[in-house]
Every structure is written in structure tokens, then in C-alpha cells.
Length: 410
Image (cartoon, rainbow, N blue to C red):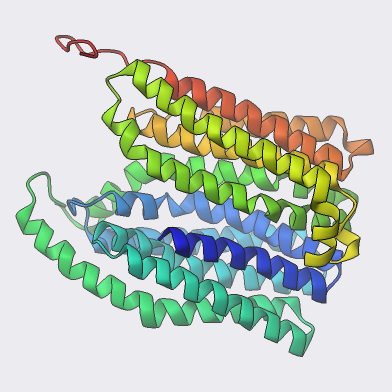
């Protein structure tokens, strides 16, 4: 699964590189704005169903309820994205990109839920292979189509088409095999089972998914806030910032993998505050060191690398990229601390710190708007993410309130 995530992240970076090499920064900016509207919306209404399904190893919720919830959320997210996108852009090419991005997100949402169900059913390898095939094939389809048609929207639509083919042919088989496992567990695992009518079963999925979706959506919003402000100044700046922002994908991948790997350890230590805090400090400390190394690399060697991966137009912004790396580190600390807090049943408070971080980020850019540059946008992103990270870490590390009659750490 981890190898699949690596290939997937690399393929997303490759898509931006292809777009940057075959179009102009303004076109990249149109793509970034479309993604900036679609990603937070789809994540928020996606309700974190992949994580929820992956943890449902006892099959306490029906697969049909997961599918119905995902379908309804995807439909609503599509309508909101189309409405918001059409209002935010006015050129025919930009509106075509919005439509293509919606198709891309729909295809991604289908496979995303199947990955969660597959993980709960012991098919992590199938999910990882699917991510590899989708990533490499999607980049190839997009690059070939953009080269042949000179249309970014057509390239994105081609990538969406490939993803849908993989979902319909390969991922569908994973879903079918998982259904067999699900039915076996319904009769063999003790505990509450899905009961009531269809609406009751769907509600059993929606209720725990809402806080997960809110957290995911706010986290994505934090990443895209700079794009909204820069687009009001110069769409080309949005394209350059978006391309540089994908440099943080490596750090984001590390944070997700690190957080997922540490979650069982957090769960085992929830009643041992000292050891829990030490583990949280070790993991977040490692992420901070990694982020500082990434920022140093951005300052020292990023210009020639960026010029080669994209075009020379995107080089010369090493300071902005360094702050983006710091911002990505803050986001990773938020992610890991969120996993830790989840083991202590502190999901409900996570949106508070994310809203604070987004507010700080947006407020700084509004304050600096008249002279806002890529450097300033990166700095605001770093400060906002660090604010959220500090709050989330403190919330996760705060000792649990002991239940009456429960002994100490032992």
C-alpha cells in the first residue's frame, strides 16, 4: 500500500509537470483554482469514508450504506463545485477545466471508498496496485491528450476516463471480493449489527463520518487558501504557487504514512500519558526535522531542479518554496496529532484548531494583500499551518480524564 501511495503522489506531481511544460502558468492557475474548489468540497462531503470503512473490520455497517453515502455526497459535491467554479471563473477554457476536474473527482471518489473496504477485508495489496495503475496510466493519458489537442480540459478528462476504467474493471473486483468477506463477518463477529431501514443504515455511516469529513475538508482548504488570494492578483502567480506547492507532496506523503504507522501505538498508550506524549513528540519531532531539511534543500538547490522539472518561469522562488515546505510540515504535524487525538476520542475539537489555522493564514494574506507575493503567501501558509499544528498537538497530548474506579498508568 505504501508503494502505491508513493507512485500515486509522484504521478500527481508529474501531472503538474506535464501541464507546466505544455501550457502557460495561467493555465496551471486555472487548474489549481478548479482543484481548490473541488478538493475541499469533495473531501468534506466525502465524510472520511475510506478511513471509516478501513477501520470497520467487524463489518458493523453495511457496504450498501457506505456506497449510498458516498454516492449522495459525491453528487452534492459535484453540484457545489460546478456552481462555485462557474461563478469563480469566466473564460470558456477555465469552465471546461472545472467540469473536467469534477469528472476526475468523481472517478477518484469511487476508487477511494473501494480502497477503504479493501483494506478492512485484507486486500491492501490490491488497493496499492490500483493506485499505481491509476497514477501511471492517468499521467500518460493526460500527457498524450494535451500534446495531441493542446487542451488542458481534454487532458484532465482523459485522466478521469482512465481512472473510471480502472474503477470499473479492477477496483470493482476488489469490491466484489470484499462483499464476500463482509457477509462472512456479519455472522461471525460479535457486536452491534446494521439494523433498521435504509435511512437508518445510512445514518450509521454519516454520523461518525461528519467530523472526519470536516477535518479533511478544512485541511485541504488550508493548502488552497493562498491560491484564492493570488488568483485575484495574477492568475499566473496562482499557477506558479500551485506548481511549487506540489513539492510538499513528498513531505505530506511522509506525514500520512508516518501517522498511519504510529496510530496503533497511540491506541495502545491512551491510558499512559507519559509514554503517549513521548511517542507523539518523537513522531512530530521527526517530521519537523524532515521539514527543516526540505526547507534547506529548497533554499540551496531548488532553482535548477524546478527549472528542469517545470520550466524556467517557475524558478527563482526558493524562499517561497522553503516556506511551503514548512507549511507542509505543519500540515503533517496536524495529521499525526489528529490520528493521536482520534485514539482518545477527540475528533470533535479538531475542526476548531483547523479553523483557527485557516483564519490566521487568510487574515495574514488579507493584511498583506496590496503587496502580496509568492514569498508572503508561503509565509502565511507556514504560520497558519504551524498555528493549527500547535493546537492539535496540545489537544492530542493533554492527558485523558480518568474514569472513576480506573487505576493509574500501572
